[in-house]
Image (cartoon, rainbow over all chains, first blue to last red; front, side):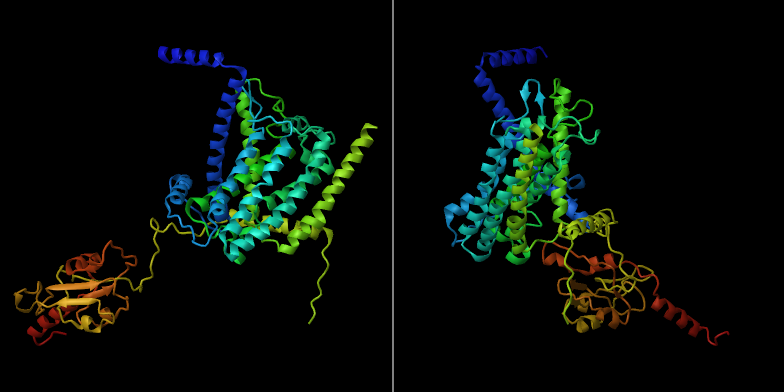
Length: 369
Length: 180
C-alpha cells in the first residue's frame, strides 16, 4: 500500500512537471486509445447483436454456442478471420486492392475524434478534439468513405465488384449532398459548428410541450424534417438496407467485397459497423441531445465523477437505440430499386433539404426582426 | 387484362404503411416461440418403425442369435456386411438349438444404406435396424463395426423368443398325447 502510494506520488509529480501542451497530448492519447478500443469492442458486439436480432426476427435462435448466450462469438469470428488463408486473385490491381479495406475503416475511426461522448470526467472534457469546425471535419471524412468501395470495386477487376462499386459511388455521392444540406438548419439554429454548442442548445425541455426534452428532433418542424432526411441519408451512406445496393447479395453475389478473403474481408465489415456507430452517434449528438437528459439536472456538464460516468452511459444508451434501429430496419425492409434510390435522393431529398434551409433562414430572420 | 393501379396517396408515398406493417410483423416474430432444436443436446425422437443402423441382438438368455447363415451378407445391396463363419475353428454356438455362430461379423457403416434387407431376410431374427442415426468416427477403420460392438449396441431383444417357443412345443411333443 505504501509502495503504491509512493508510486502514485511519483506519477503525479511527473505529470505536474509536464508542460500544458504535454498534458494535453497525454490526455488526448489516453482518450484516443480508450475510445478506439471501446469502439472496436462495440463493433464486434454489434455484429453479434445483429446476428441475434435477425435470428429472432426469423424465428431462429442465432449464435449461442460460444460462451454464455454466444457472448464469445465475436472472439471466435475474429480469430477465424485472422487465421483464414488469404487469397489475392492474380487479376487484381494489387496496390489499390490492398488499400481499399483500411480505407473502409479509417474515416469512421477518425470521425469519432469529434463526437462528444460525455461531459467531463474530472477536469477532462469527454471529447478527443473539441473542434470549432466539428461538422465540417465529419463531412470531410465521411466523403472519404466512398473511396474504399469504389477502389475495392475497381481494383478487384471483375464484373460484380465493379458493378457494386459503380452503384455505391453514385449512391454515396448523391446522399452525401442531401445529408450535408439536411443539417444546415440545425447550425442555423445553433449559430456554431461546434458539436458541444449543438448539445448545449438542446438542454432543457420543449417550449411548446413542457416535460419533453428540448431535442432538435422534436423542437420544430424544420429540425424534425432535417432529422428525417439525415436519418434516411445515413442509411444510404452506410450502405445498409434498404439502400444496400453496393453489396446486394441476390444481384451481385456480394458486391464490392467478393474478391476479398480473411482479414481484409473482415475489415470491410468492421468499417460498415464502425460507420453505423458513427452515424448513430452523429444523430444522437445533432438531434437527440448527445449526453444530456433534461431531467434531474443531467443536462449540465458534470462536476463530479458519478455524473461524468452517467453522461457517458446516457450517450451509449442513446447510441444503442439507434444501432438496434439500424439492425432492425435491415431485417424488415426489402431493397430499393436503383432508380427509386436515385429518384429519392435527387428529386425528393435535395429539393426538400434546400427548401428547409430557406424556410429556417427566413423564420430565424423574422423571429429576430 | 389491364390491372388498374391506384395512385399512391401521400401517406403511402411516405412509406408509412410499410413502416408500420414491417414493425408489426417483425415484432410478432421477434417474440414468437422459436422452433430451432438445440441438436446435440436435444435429439430428435425417431418414429417406432425408423430404420437406423443395423445391430445384432441377443436373445432373452443373453446368447448370440446369429447362426452365421450369411443370408444377410448375400442380400446386402452395398455389400456392407462381411461374415466369417466358424469353419474348423471349433467355435461352438453359445446356445442350444443352433449349429454354429459367426467367428466374426462386420458391418461397414460407411457402406450401409439402411435399407433393412438384412433384417427382413434373417431367419433367426438376429439383426434389427435400430434407432441410431448419427454415426461418427475419426477413421474409416473405426466405422467398420465388429461382432462385439454390434452385439453390445444391439442389446437384448426380449420380445422375440423364437427358439424358446419351439422348445416348449418340442417338450409338448415328448409328452404325447397332448392334454387338451
